Image 1: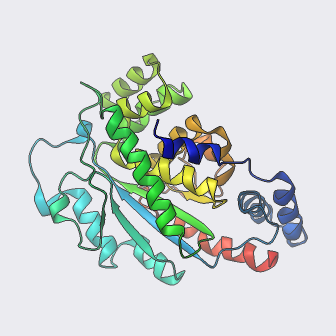
Image 2: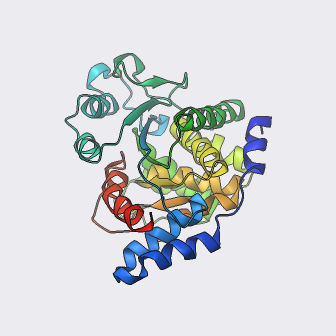
Length: 311
């Protein structure tokens, strides 16, 4: 563990139960339980009953996994590249919602397989796609550590102008295999494998059989985006900034972050079902499954309503 990571972990205090209740009580007269629950999560994380939402950003981390490698170079036709360009050029659903909620999007290359074809606006962290976790560790411990540190640096950079909350999403081939392994290793959860994907089932079995430190588990089964997002979540929590999650890949990163610092759970908010319980019960269930940040962005108008009442 790096000294930077150690310092961040030691800087995380529990979310404030008193402020969570204070924020909830401000919403109680409205008689809308979902807003009360959201107010409590935000107030506890921000350590204030006067919830803030005006300054926010969406960070979408790209990371391809060796377990999902198609075996040939797809160049500009790689699914991660196509999705990233759709976000950058404004045609993706996430971009549309971000425009209507006046929320900037930051695209982060945390280990895409075809980095040369990504949008010019993507922030390059110098990470690479991982190895096939079904055959060997996905990353070295050194690479996992560097990814965590990069996520910490990213969170600090995004927060320098002052930020009230961060929303995150992730894109990358093979993330469902990585998530299954991390669920097994960190949550001891046996996946149902409803898709019938043997790779997912095999990864979950590997995770269930694996023992090691959080860093070793991250290196064995995580991706570049997992490490970066986990570092971002830890740093955000150390600065009392709530993080809105979207999709299984961000949920897996939340599991990693919580393994390093259990108190981080109080700063994570699951936007919808399908995200691990490290972030608590989801705010809504709408059948979203892409995980690139759309679900998190859809939560922003509700957060604005909470902030308006709590002002």
